[in-house]
Image 1: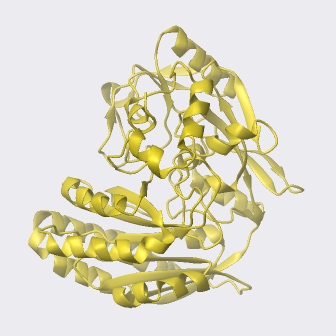
Image 2: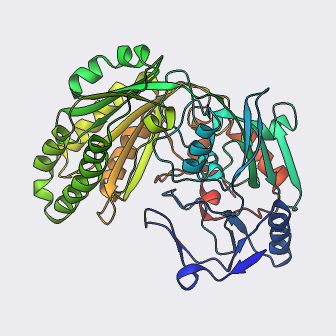
Length: 439
């Protein structure tokens, strides 16, 4: 096991640049046994322990002044079970590597988010999701978990083994233990046809129920200060495969969606008065296109422009009213918002702290370019979201606390009781968990 000095003179920063931590030491275990030993040693030294993936959360969910566990040596596929159609992966495996490895085996996750930089454990522990009418978050595709608990023991859980832990630990916020391996349900690789096209916001909202019902995966981006959206519909296809051409893909996904968009963000930050014009131009830059490819090439996109994000899940039936209220609030304010608002959906699931726990949900994500003040916009948006019993994404900016979560999560007490049992001394505690789960 290697114990290293924290990078940048003892400072750790997240991807968005809005969270900074100063761990006492960093540990990069090469095995589950070494990780368990690191947890036991931290207890002997009276230090808290947190594992961190790629730092893609905008909250301080992984920050610590104790021992920071880096799982980059705990990667790769452990086993593939084609009878059960499951794959067990090491917790530190980046999603982009997992998707490629599964594709080589002729397999795929059923659904995935649009960013693949996160580790498998980081993404699932915070409830990362894509969009789907019938298929839910990445965590909802978990069939088994292995985690190191506060006393350094290794615990396995599934629907059959330690089911009460399984019910909660799929989205565990790092509060129940350090996840070391995840078993996912997979299926034979399939094709998706993506249909992307601009559409007026009023038309999207008026027809939202139909757009949701008629498509396996529907999402859209609304550009504030305009009445414009870009929509995306993904549906399974019998083929043939018709991927985006290399030149077209570079032009639209790299040059426009990243390069030109980056410049637009710089202009908006430097000259806020220009934002409405820039937003109007950006919303019209991408033309309609249709293509057919394997799932990870359709669901995911490169995201090179850095930002800070808040996202809330509201009941799906409340989506249209919530978004209209957000638009009205932005229009009445003096804010200038240069980043589009992303809207997705998920069916209800049975995970205690899932943002879709027990209810069909719609997600509204607001973003600000990194380095641009975001507090006023996020405060305005949060006021709208919480009026509809919104549940914030655990890895994205929010101001809610345990008292609020006890009201909007029916199984919140079930989770905190399990935490009391598995981590009574709060070995995995940090300031963020103290706020959102209570002391």
